[in-house]
Length: 68
Image (tube, rainbow, N blue to C red):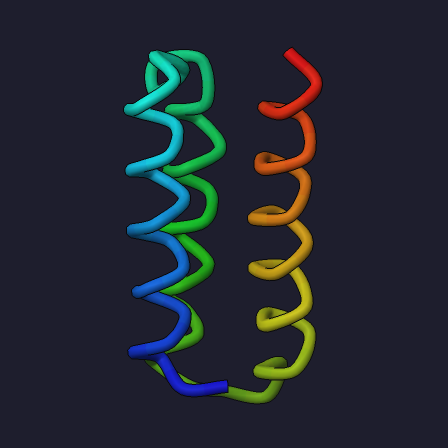
């Protein structure tokens, strides 16, 4: 996956959380996603694992926010 695509998905996720008024509830999760995205951009040995973590975090936030 390209970094641009990941950034786009992250922005859409944050916009959805803002729309629902849950941005402050998931602020910690957004910071975790940002941290992983920054590390993914830098490169390194564990790129595949970082990508998995990013996608799992985004999916978890989206699913959990829908259950609220």
